[in-house]
Image 1 (cartoon, rainbow, N blue to C red):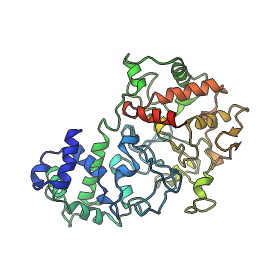
Image 2 (cartoon, one colour):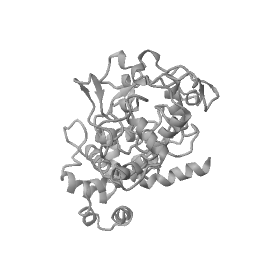
Image 3 (tube, one colour):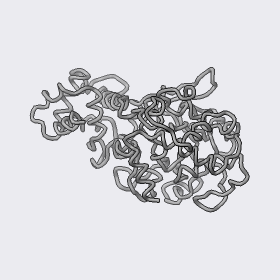
Image 4 (cartoon, rainbow, N blue to C red):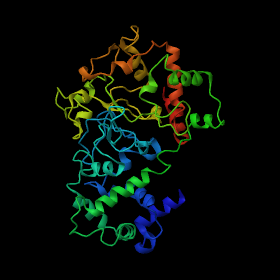
Length: 386
């Protein structure tokens, strides 16, 4: 951490950019770029604005949407999706169709439209409702404003990285910008695997009775069906990401609070995987990438549109498919609303035994112990605020 703070100080005050540049790795450059607001139109927004490192790499800012979606650099624009957690995104493979599974797998964003983390890093700076730069050329110009960046980019990527006559499909300096952020996102800062669950696997933490029940339920094929979407390896494997990186439609309703903000049409429907240019089969309509359950207890609101505020509500939503006693959304006091995209709901994956309140409490308790050690204080803050 001291080295990173030094690098940030260099970024602002260094009088010898070339010497400073010689001390950075690609990942350290990526961290500085990740935190720098220079790459948004009004210089108010960085990658870390929506992926705050101290908040589980999620957006905890208060805004007009009641934190359902993120606010853009212009202080007015709002997105249509809840900002995904960036932590553990480095566990996802490139977007592809698995011929064995007959499923789309991997990629970045909720619809997998970016193949890699570097591809994803190119999106927000040029998105008009996010960081809002008009084009890649402007981003490269912002890099060249800083002698420290110029020296570092040339050392890491070659003297021709800023060559304006490049015939590459993507400007070399823009690609380098994205590669550096990808290198940072591939560090342990984004995937520390040090939660209570990970410590339990090492014999360093004893599960409570409720946490142990939740663990048993989660890995069981006879009770719930969590592991059909949120398990990549086998039970109690080390460094489990708690997602299979596939896509499902679980019948999430549209978020009327989001639509009521007025920036979306009243009949707005998010088609999920069909928004990905590589996918055109209507059977994938409304399917979204299964998120990692790592840090899920501190990364609400939930679902692609932020329709549920509490993790326990999510569990009751799942249970309502199998339990006639779960007919009411506890957050609204009204019946669960119809799916946003009803025709492709993955009913088989949602089939399970009905859950008691205690079993739901146990599953929530288990998911809480998937919280990285440094974010455990956020859980304590949640308990105090109740």
